Length: 291
Image (cartoon, rainbow, N blue to C red):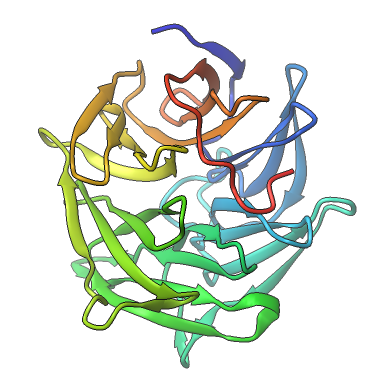
């Protein structure tokens, strides 16, 4: 296993986005920021507060962020109280952040975790749920229609939905469940629509051993690469075949693809606060609206 360390000292990095200029935009959950790693430096683009988690480029060139509200990790050296969770938008030209929404169907979001845009300009996102004492909020999957035309609850009652991604033909939505170590597939009938009877999804595979699944990225061949806490990266085929890429960190949280051939894998190692780059055996799927 050979990799290059692009940044160190990051405060729980997640949500990497490989940019065309060679930089990588990511979130630092414990710092509450959207940050950019470039030429050995890390700079803050926007101080969002709360717990910025998954991030993706939208059709307008802005970065959309699933903000879990914080409260589970210290921000810098001081633990700050959580804020209301929601979906944020950051204008990269100005560094200005704004809250887009924090309720769906009259219900407050609990802890949005990750998001992915479809080719139509809408985006799917997961809500991880939140633990309060001995009470845990259920997890859900939602769809935000293009242009702010509305947000719909697609599935509710999961166990820690985390990473989310689309198959190359966008007929399947994948979601990783953290606590169960399962990859769940939702068959889609169209933008924001699951097939009849498919709101609960179907099981693709379960992690070997006692791994916890985090965020994910999809390869061009349709295989799903899941960041697996304690296990590095777990690659799962649509038929359930599993491969492992071990990494020296107990909190491997996310992966994205970049470079001219999309075989540069950018991976966040959150236990040690590092962003690394390594060559991947297969090219990643080019994301909609990628820079």
